[in-house]
Structure formats: C-alpha cells, structure tokens
Length: 420
Image (cartoon, rainbow, N blue to C red; front, side):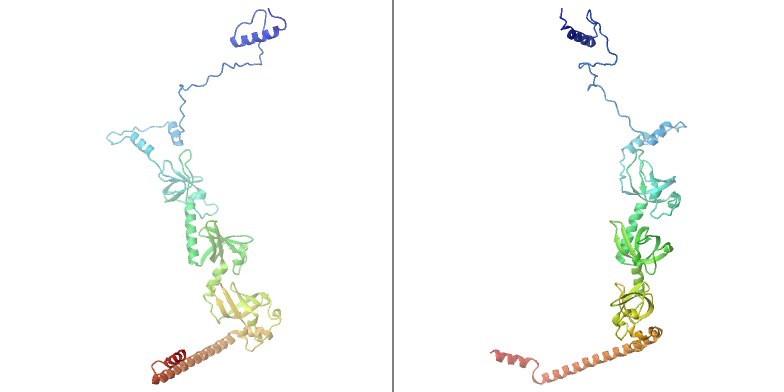
C-alpha cells in the first residue's frame, strides 16, 4: 500500500504505462485520455528509408516534340527497313550520340523556313529549329515593319546565336548583331580614310541632331551644323559629314557637317579670291566673317590702310561684306581675310565701304597686276644678284690660277710660319 502522499505520483506512472503499452489501467484507477493532446514516444519514430530500399528513378523531361508525338492519334506509316544497311533505331542512336557545337555568339549559316507572328523560324541544322525575333531581324528598321518585310522565306544567310537552348532545344538567333558589327567596321575604315560622306538626319534635340550612319546613330552637335539650326525642318535631309570621334567600345559616334563643308569649299579657294561673307562677331583684334559655313578672320590691321580707333564704326554684326583671301589653312579650315587690298585709295573703307565693295573686283584685278609686277621685279633682282656673284667667283678663280693651284695655299704657309 502507498500513502496518500505517494498516490499522485503513482497515478502518473500508471497513466504513462497505459499510454506506452496499451494495457488496462490498474485496479481502482480510471484514466480519461484527452482528445486534444497527442503524446509521442521517444522510442517509436517514423521509419527512415534504409539503404537497401531502391531509389525512385527521376522521370525524364519530355521535349515539346516528344509530347506532341505521344499525343498523336492519326495514322502511322509502317516502317520497313528491310534491305537497308542500317535501321531507324541505328539512325536514332547516331543522332543521339552526335554532338552539336552551337554556342552563344557563334555565327552559323541557316535558312528562313517560315514567318511567325513575332519572328521567323530558321533552320540552322540543330536538333530543333531556331527562332529569329523581329527586333533582331535587321539593323535598319522602319516603324511598322513586320518580319515579312525584313527577311524572305527561303533566304539563306548568316545568323548569330544569342541564347542558350530552352527546354525544347530551341535557340534564338540574330541578323541585326552581325550587321551591327559590319557597320562599325565600315565606320572605322571611313574614319581612317578621313573621307566626306552623306547621311540622313533622323532626329533633333536640344544639343544638335541625330544622323543615321551605316545604320548607327551618330550625334551631330549644333555648333557643327553649317548654315542651319537644329530644328525639325531639317529632319529627313541628307548632308555631308566627317567624323569627329569614333569610339566603338563606348558606342560613341560624333560627326561634323561644318568640317565637311569647309573641306569641300577650301578645295575651291585660293589666295587672292574675292568672297562674299557676313560679319558674325566683333572682337578688339578684328571681325569674324562667315563664308559659306566657314569662319574667317578679318584682322583690324587688314581692314584699311588708315588707323582704326573704333571697329564698331566700321562694321556691325550681320553686315554683308566683300573680302579678299590673303591666307588659308586647309587642314584646320581657317582663312585670313583683307579689305584694305580692295581700297582704291587708302582710307576708303572708313569713308565709303559700299563703294569699296562695289569696285572690289576691279580693284582686286589691279592689285593682282601690281603684285605680279612686284614678283617679277623681285625675281629679276634675285637673278642679277646670282649672276653678279657668279662673275665674282670667276674672277677669283682666274686670279688664283696665275699663282698657285690652291687659292688657300698662301694662307696656309703664313700660318705655318707663325706657328713655327
């Protein structure tokens, strides 16, 4: 028998025994198992799979073609490979064991076999046909073009692989990226040759205009537009350009219209020509005159033979003038101008500039005649100097021939006597 003090402990032990062993409770005690409490034995655990049990094999992922083939309910052709050196099973094994080297960025040949909604199906010789998205079909695309306007069915061309195989074994290919690389190669070659080329203006912005050069977007700064402003009116026009900067690594292309115009006009200009221009700006040292997109300097010393104290009393910005080209730098597109060579009389530019411009051609003709006469006079004087020098040398040779064959012999003997 147990005491009253031991009874609660005994009841707990008996209840635990009933739960573990499933036995009936001891006599004199009744136990009710709570419906909301679930006791777990530390001995009985969920059986873990043993090493001897076989592992469940992974289900292979079917391709889209295999799924469609399995669902096909139509007639099937009987395969008869009698008389052949190989069977269809052998052919399947050969295809399965063949390794295809189709990697990203590879360039392969292919054939467009079908147009799709968002691109074209291309056969490149892989296990599955490749897909050409519309945005990758060409470098130059007009808004609204669909795939039928960019590539023709049956066309054979080169494609660049731009993705890995998807779950169906399909690759994405591009024509645009091949054309993009070829366009940069042509641009670099043009920059090396430093040639003038024509390009179309396709957009304008606050800083200038955007031109299409070999399908690439080139920036034309507003300061390099000759005789034009970057407004929407010039969109669609073709203008001559030259490259200012070509940076393929950073995809940066900068062009200049002014440089191309200057080069073309400089080829037709020479010293002494009379040109029409407009005064663009006045500086303390002279005036800048725009001549067909070029900027020429009319130095204050070349305006008139008379002294000029205030340049603004002679010229105003926007004024049309006639000048003579007295020097030019074709490499940098710079020209030096003069109006004093057009003055019939010294100081006429300060007294009556309109009269000077009106008689500019006649005055320039007389100036050229005077310069030609001065040139001939200088040549004649130089020839007389050369001929006189020749006569002096002949006399010296004759005098030296009478005494000694060496005209410096006497000098040498004198030096020897002094040194001894």
